[in-house]
Every structure is written in C-alpha cells, then in structure tokens.
Length: 257
Ligand SMILES: [Zn+2]
Image 1 (spheres, rainbow, N blue to C red):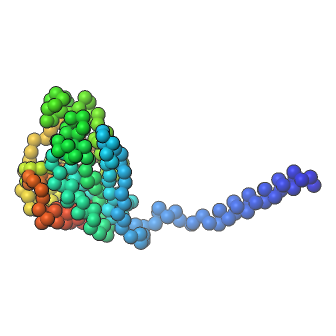
Image 2: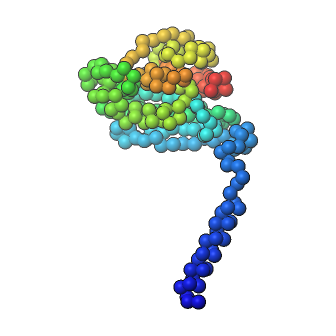
Image 3: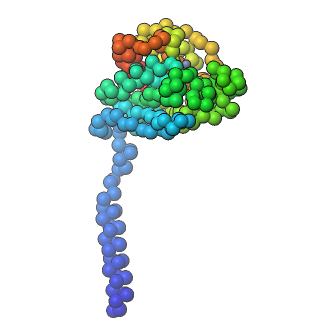
C-alpha cells in the first residue's frame, strides 16, 4: 500500500467516525419545537446598539424579559428632543427586575442630538415624528418646527426605529411626549389606550393625527397592533410619576401583550 493510499484511508476513516458522532449527537426533537412553558431560561436585560444619530450618538434599545417572546411591548422614551420626561420612565423600567414573562423592548432616547441641543428636531432640523411614511408630505420649510425632511425616512433615527419595529412587530407601542398631560387615542385598540390612561392617571383624548407620525404609520403598517402617544405634563417628571409610569407599562404587558 502506498503512503498516499494509506493516508486517504485514514482520512476517510476519521471522516466516517466524525459523521457518526455528529449523527449520534443530533437531538431527536429540535429545541425550537419544545413548548414555551418547558423553557426555564431566566428573564434577561440585554442592551443593543441600534445605530447612531446624525451626530454619531449611540441609539440603544433594551430587551427586558424573554428575548424570544413574540409581539413585545415597545416603549420609546423620547422622539422630540425638548420633551425628554419619558426617558426617566424608561430608565426606571430598564433598572427594575425584568418581567417574568413576555418581552418589553425600550428605546430610551430616539433623538439624542435633539435632547443634547434641547430642540424638538434632530440635528438636521427634521421633526422625526413627521418623517415616517404614513401620508408623509412636506409640511414646513427647513427651520420650521414640523419640518418633515426631504422625503419619508430621510433620517437615520427614523430608519432605526422603523427597522426595529418591522423586525419585532410589537403588539403595543407607547411613545412619550410632553407637555399636554393626556393619553392620545392614536388609532389602535382603544381599550389598551384607555387602560394605560387609567393606570398612569391621565385623561384619554384624541389629538390630531399628523401626516408622517410614527404611531399612525405603525397602526396602519401593522394592523391589529396598537401604537399610541402618551403626553406627559411639562417639566421634569416627579419621582411618583416615574414610578407610576414604569409600573403602568409592566401592568399593560401583563394585561394585553
Ligand atoms: Zn412630541
């Protein structure tokens, strides 16, 4: 037997042994097919970098609970930079123990450049809550409070939010704003909006539905889901409001999501 033939036989033998071991290790049932109740993984708190703002500031999301749970509840702490009160509620939620079942996804701050500058718009002067594709149109010239950008999704911040929303398809989405102190009937399931209004202690009212707004886009793009606006009171939120808001979100998850 030549050396080449002997080597070839050894290699073939090794390959067969590996293949058999691999076959023996194959579990009889795929893990993904196991019933959800059978899983014993502890709930997680996981930080994700979604991307960066126009000025390069990180935009983060947090997964709280079961990272594989379908149809999570999404909370956006701020989209308008001069309305930052919701960020405190989201940070409180992020620091609490994650919910025992289901998933909360948070984006503490979708407009970090606007928050740093104290402006409603992002660093290019775009009102991100007029930059989504639902009935988008040019609303005001650059410099106007509701400048909607050169075209829908022209801004990195709105594109990041859209990508996360289409990937996770949240059943419920809350977007915090200020200063009207009410929960807006934004076009989803009114029972969910009314329930949250009661939990956080704010009245339920219907505001104008603006072209290009995130909640309207989501309510039309993902039928059967509920995205709505929560207008907090003006100024820095009290510790009691932060606690009430964060508890209300966890209760809403248990009730509807
Ligand atoms: Zn706002």
